[in-house]
Amino acid sequence: MEDASAIKQKMFHFFMAVARRCGAEILDGKAVTLADRLLYALGNFFVFGPLKNVLGLSRVRVAYTAGAAIGPDLFRFYRSIGINLKQLYGQTETCAYVCLQPDGEIKFDSVGKPAPGVEVKIADNGEILVKGPMLLREYYKRPDATAEAINADGYFMTGDAGLFDDDGHLKIIDRAKDVGRLVNGAMFAPNFIENKLKFFPFVKEAVAFGDGREMVCAFINIDIGAVGNWAERRGIAYSGYTDLAAKAEVYGLIQESIEQVNSELLGEGVLADSQIHRFLILHKELDPDDDELTRTRKVRRGFVAEKYAVLIDALYSGRDSQFIETAVKFEDGRQGKVAADLAIRNLKVFGTAGREAS
Image (cartoon, rainbow, N blue to C red; front, side, top):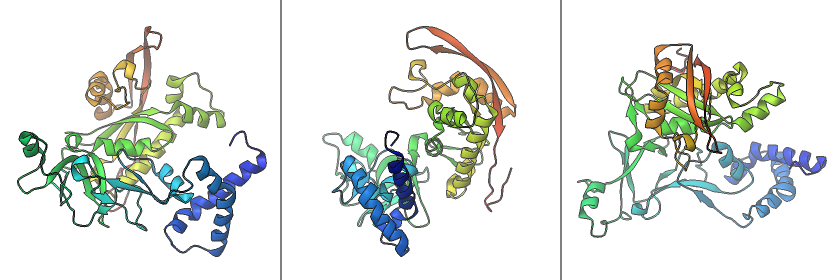
């Protein structure tokens, strides 16, 4: 839109505001005012229709997303412009899908309700167990693998961890092998927390710690592009990633995002105790060249915990800051070091009664 005329830009932003306000409700057949319905129809003619055509989605009646969770903003965007996007959950062993979002019951953080004839239950360790006529009978010539995957009661052990909300919708929270416990026995699902954080445009990477500990703490990598633009609009000068990440204003920005996640975790039942108590912003971006991420940009949690053990110790020992010097590899093959004194901040956490606890 940056190359469009001023009139087109204003029209786009006006009608997208209309879409955000009532687009999903119209798609779900819910009641909206006549004025909003008329404005949405105009928006569909001038903006949404051409936009869907450019995306190749003009004739799509329903679309599904599965696998890794997409951000709520992206999900809302597609539904707001009239694309009936839904989330589902399934595996090869379950013949496509286990859960699916029914029309009119779309939630951004769930994969819907179990399909008819499918039984889904949650094991004591949080693992999702599935049973139904669509389930595989066995792995071909692999009785050992079959015995490992299907328990004595005939349930397929998916390897994913999840929970049901009050409306019977399944939420995928992590891989079962990655789910841990706080010292009080509460469930700790690091990927679920990290994904919630990364849905914010200012957070590029997050690493949560808490297994076997009394509370959850986190490392944050800011998105240099998004935070840099935010800083420039406010006249905040910076010389690079390390300088920007250390700014008090940036810490305040990230703190707001994390505390919003904490308020959301309060409503997640067994994960309510996984609210983040303390955080710091890393002085460098996690990088595959430094072995901190895989080539598909997944955090190598064990390696990061070992490499930055001094920072984890600082988070859990109550310090306000911690100096660190880290070796880095540059794209041209050179090696160097990045040093910084990292600030550590406490966060609001919320009690089970919805009150701010600390």
